Image (cartoon, rainbow, N blue to C red; front, side, top):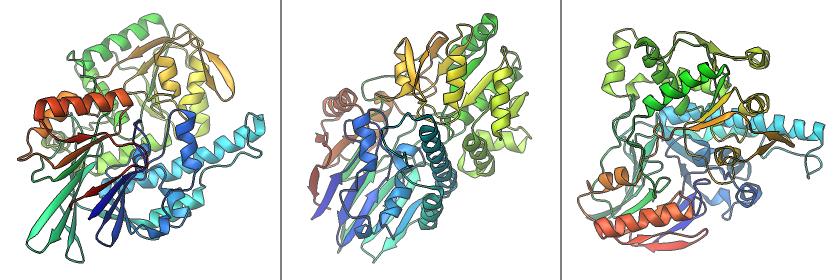
Length: 464
């Protein structure tokens, strides 16, 4: 028998970690960081429930922090094996791990300097040296490439359409002439994205682990681009600066693509656009290099000489000095900085500087997890705590959900209806409780499948 244990992404959209014990092999699917409420974040400091040295392989679906960010600590605790992902994910992980370690070291230094820490002294979860060592474990695969282990297990990654390099994890176990398959969706993308391919349709799935971030919601049918046009124009009219917290990998590039198109069509003025995230800058270079992982339309644009991620007045802020200089700009500008949920990075300094001024606008373009500063701001709180201070929220707060890289429940159901048979069991994960429950109910009522919502630490025996 095979055992599947859920050590994360249960009752939350963060900390994806699934332990698959198959034959004599132990696989950890995802190695993500917990974010949001303090009780979740504290789990990052706990020792992993299973000794990392006993895990044979780690497999990442994609590079986002909640799927990969714990890996340097996992290696620090003793993991010795290989970690498989796509080539784009490998490149993004190099950026993300080093950036994460640097930010943690900086935050610890700042906390010790200002004294707003309960731990004496404050320490990072892992260091830059830990991050660099963890990169030696990455062993990338091409989309569709078969990795056979002892002839009885086959691992394959298929395009999930969520961000560049995102992949569905397809694991097949052979027993004589028979075989069975388990698929982990990671974060499933939406169809008809601007430069990404649609999620790959899979077949003959016996067990499925599916995300549910938008399990209780549908994306607004109204064109999110129209809303972006309105927000930009109103920001100019208000005489302030537009600040957009954005994930460095995926969402920032989507924004740059759309802003460029709107400028070229004359629908918005060509404002100065400041990218103030070293990781987002480096990630955009990866996007430009890995055009082969994008859809046909993007490749055609590149052939025709279009720099698809470059608005007319793009400013790249690589240094701390360049970042601080943005504070002198009082109006008619767009600042895009990480992190997307305002959990860390340079966006914190921009929030401190811009939130108290009612002329400014803060635009959220993605899901804000429970317990994050982004969620606090979106829910119209009067203040938000940043660097130990309560910052008044007087800026105009806007939110556009149509730019999300996650499929909503109808889009997930549409993908599931493409299966040629019902899985023996479907596990719904990576969602807040009401979202996961709603997704499970949708699957049961529409498809009649056997669906389970696992709890943290719960194990299941699979006939795999």
